[in-house]
Length: 117
Image (cartoon, rainbow, N blue to C red; front, side):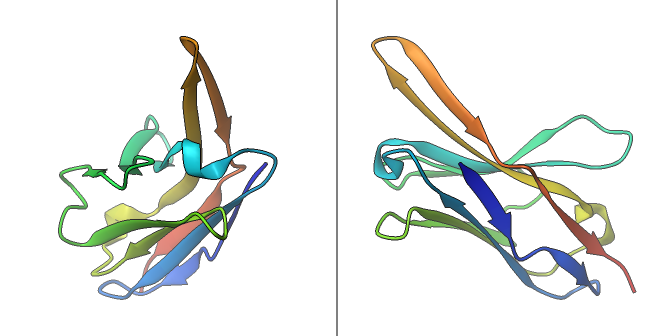
């Protein structure tokens, strides 16, 4: 129900935008976000955006990455600028909503982003 696209290889200092298209859910009601996992490391939060548009970023990406959403397209974006080799990871999108105290959570399959010269 979540499908990422736009990953690939980019040189240090370059930019890349990844997208995540949702289906089968009322996207506008979900908090959505991006997480990443580098080889040998645990998955970490990159950025989230609530249904109200409030954003949150990991300290390591503040000022370089921007998360946004288009509810008309049921899509969340992550614009990544000034990329560094340490940004290399599998990036996955996440959508979560709470209904009557129960969490409904979905994950994408992940997409590779490699920053290398």
